[in-house]
Amino acid sequence: MYKKWLFFLFQSFLLSCSNYLSDNSNTVLTIDVEKEINNLSDIKLSEFCRTISYVQLETLDSVLIGRYPKIVVTTNKILVSSNQQPLFVFDRNTGKYLNKIGHKGNDPEGYMDDGWGNIKYWVDNKAEIVYFQSNDMKGLLKYDMEGHFIGKFNLPMENKIDLYSSCLFVENDTAWVYNKFFDRKEQPVLVCFSVNNEDLYWEKTTNKDLLPSFNTIRNVELLYGNQIGYGGDVYRVYFADNKVFNYVPDAPSFCKVNDKLLFKENFVDTLFQLNKMDLSAYRVFDMGRFAWPYEERFFKERSDERLYIDYYYCANNILLAHLTQGMYADKEKKKEYMLICSADMKKIMMSQKISFINDIDFGMDISIWGTTSDNKFFSCLLADDIVKYNEQSVSVNGYTKFFSVSSEDNPVIVILE
Image (cartoon, rainbow, N blue to C red; front, top):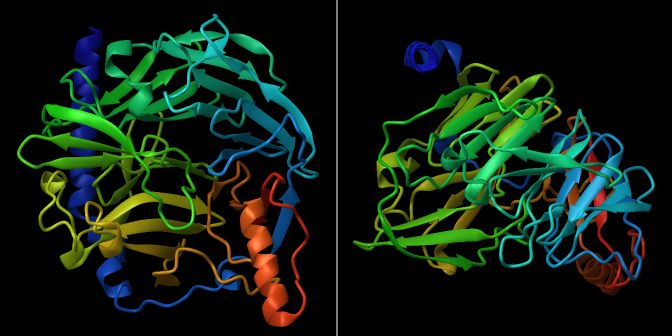
């Protein structure tokens, strides 16, 4: 009975998506990327934001944050992890250090890292619960914000969900998992389930080709701009026949905007809105002659001109997308773009500079690292970068407008609205 119900649900989903997408000129707003790439210009912060505030994270000998931290900003807390460090919690308003959450280890309460010293964690902002990947890779460890261990949640259909190479979003009792790197027929692209009773709500399968058998997988550092804003490393997979595939497990595929949960699949130029039982198209990126067909996602040849949306954020009724041209090309041939679009589509801008020109307080330029739980953009300024900016400002202007930090200090979090 369950299989029949799931089959009927999936058939209904396919029909609804087919009807929805077949008339997207009338129902789904389209962003003409090919048009915008011919009108590149620097984007001022005041074009899309009104105010900017800074939160300097407290620096202690026992609480030191590395170069490429993974950051989550909730309503009243800032959670930060970096290489070879546990998860630290700071007060969002003052930056004061509050506590750490959990520890890496092989004991029942210990979570795993990715083999390079980075931990994977996901935050349920509404329930104020933090999830870590368990060491047996079969479930999630649950902690509260004060660092108390709550228990373990065993994944339903564990053979279909690979958290090591997946993106996860959790809110209240519902979780969505996107399998970014799937090479088994039983693995769906998208799974929705309950984190309370392990009930499976639905899964989205695909008739697209699975990944071919690979020869080796190795980790490579591929920096987008000045930093990896979404945290984590790029995994490059080499296949036979000179094929290659890049994917970033921690790059955001989900984004919550007010009451909407948005989702985008790799190498797909449609942004979807998710509900508990279905999904529908929300925005379409029209790449024009720069489009990268899904079927060619493994081809190194002809990829230099293709445009690829590798991450996006939505906040304050603004959609921000980061695009890469020449994903598989050498570093000197690679180009990056930032596209900004207002919710009503009346203002669209695109720049080859992937940070905003700070014309609000005339401090450092701002690159977006994520969105807060209360629907604002946030950024992170590393102490070394602040020191260099201050030194340059003094040499050029004779004074500095920015606050003083030392190279050993923890980062400064920037909140935009």
